[in-house]
Amino acid sequence: MSEQAASGGDFDVLIVGAGISGIGSAWHLQEQCPGKTYAIIEAKDTFGGTWETHKYPGVRSDSDLYTFGYRFKPWVGAPIASGKAILDYMGEVIEEGGIDRHIRYGHTITSAKWDSRTNRWRLEARTKDGAVVTFTAGFLWMCQGYYDHQVPYIPNDWQGVADFKGQFVHAQLWDPETDVAGKRVLVIGSGATAATVVPALCDQGAKVTMLQRSPTWFYCAPNVSELAERLRTIGIDEPTIHRVVRQDYMYNFYEMDRRSREEPEAMAEDLRALIRGYVGEDFQFEPHFAPRYRVWQQRLAQLPDGDLFKHVVAGNASVVTDTIDRFTEKGVLTSSGELIEADIIMACTGFRLKVLGDIPFEVDGQAVNWVETVTYRGMMFTGVPNMAWVFGYFRASWTLRVDMMADFICHLLNHMDARGAKKVEAAFRDEDAGIEVLPWIEEDNFNPGYLMRDMDKLPRRGSNDVWRHNQNYWLEREAFPAIDLDGQEFVYDGVRRAAPLAEAAE
Image (cartoon, rainbow, N blue to C red; front, side):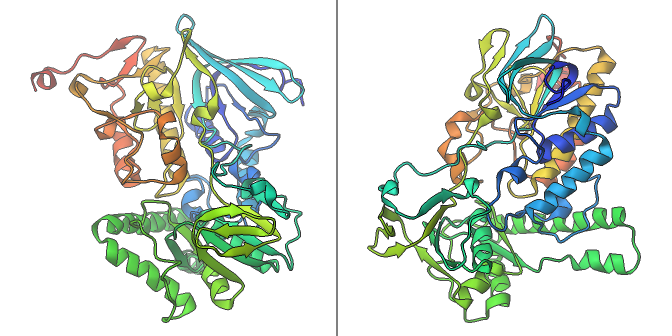
C-alpha cells in the first residue's frame, strides 16, 4: 500500500466504491467538474465491485452491455458479457481516464459524520494493516451498492444443512478452482444467478438439478446484436454504433415493460414463443416454467441463446419445483418426499441487503436512521446534507442511472459553486404538505426477496414522483434534466426559496 493510499486527506468529493457505479461517477466528475478534487474509497484490493466478488461458473451480465456499459465508452463485444469482459472494460475506463491514481484500495469505512459548522463530511476508514485514517470532503457520493459482499443470504429456516456430507456453498462464495466434472450438483434457486450457473456447470461436465420454490420468467435471444453487426459492416464508427444500438435496446425494453403492465398475457406468450424457438413447439412449460407473478414484477433473467432450456431438453439439467423439508447426509429431501442426492449443493438464494454499506452515519452528532428519512428521487435523503446514493434500475440496466445521476450531481455541485453555497439538503416543498410516507417501493411494482426481507431498513418514499425512485428510466430521462436546482425541494445553507404566489394560492 502506497504512502498516499494510507494517508487519507481532504477533498471536494469522496466517492465510496470502485465498482461499476463508482468508476462511472468518477469519469463524469472529472469531465463535468474538472476543478474538483476527489478520491474513491474502496474496501477491496482492486476495482470491480460485484464483478470482482462473484466468481461462480459462467458469471455474466444480466443486462446487455450496450446499456449496462457507460454512455461515454462504446461496447464492442457480445451483448451479454462475461464477468471478465466487464472487468476488462472497466479497466480500460480507469486507464483512459487516469482514475487509478484517485482510488484508495483496502480502506473499509467505519464511520461517516457530517458537521454543519465546517460543512464537511469526516470519514474514518480502517486499512488492511489495521491503521485508521481520516478523509474529509464537502460532498459524499455513495456508490458502494446495496448488498453485503462478504455474507450472502441463506434462509435461516433450512434444517440440517450441517448433516450434508458433500460440499455446500453459496454461489457468492464459490471457489473457481472447484472441479465439477462428473459430479452431481444441486443448484437451489431459479433467478439470474441460477440461470447462469446451471448451463455453465453442464458445460463443465456436471449433472445438474435446479431446485426452485417457484418458476422465473426468462428472456431468450441470440447473444448478438444484428443491428450492431450491420452498422459495422457498412462502416459506421463505434461511438455512433454504441449510441444507436444503446437506444434500440432501451426502446425494446421500454416496450417490454409497458406491455408487461398493459398486455401481461400477450407479453408472457411472447416470452414463451422465444423459448420455443430454441426447444421446439412441444416444450411443456408446466409446472417448472410457469411463473405465478406478472412479467417484470421480479427481474427478467436473460438467457443468451436459450442455453438453460437447451440443457434441460438435452437431459444435462433437470428441474424440481418444490420446497425444502430438510437437508440429509446425501442431499435434500423436498416437502413432497423426493430425495435429491448431490455431491455439491450450491445455494443461489440471493443477497443480504446493506443500506449505505451499513456504515454508521451521523449528522451534527445525531445518528441517522435511514427509515426515518424520505428519498428525493431515489438518490438524496431528507435531513442528510451533501450526499447522494447511486441506486440503479431493476427493469433496465443499472448503469443507465449511474450516467444520469452523475449528470445531476455534477450540475448540482456546479450550481452550488455558482451560488457560493456550501451545503444542500432535500426537503419537502410547501406543496408536499400532507404527503403520504410509504415503504421504499410498492410490492406490486417490484418484489424480489432481498427487498421484501429488509424493506424496513430502507429509506421511505413519498406518494409523488419527486419523493420516490420510480424505476422508470423513460420518465426519469426527461425529468432529471428538467429539475430546477433552485426549486423548493433544495435548501442551500439552511435557506429555502419561498413558494411562488401562484403555488401558494393553490
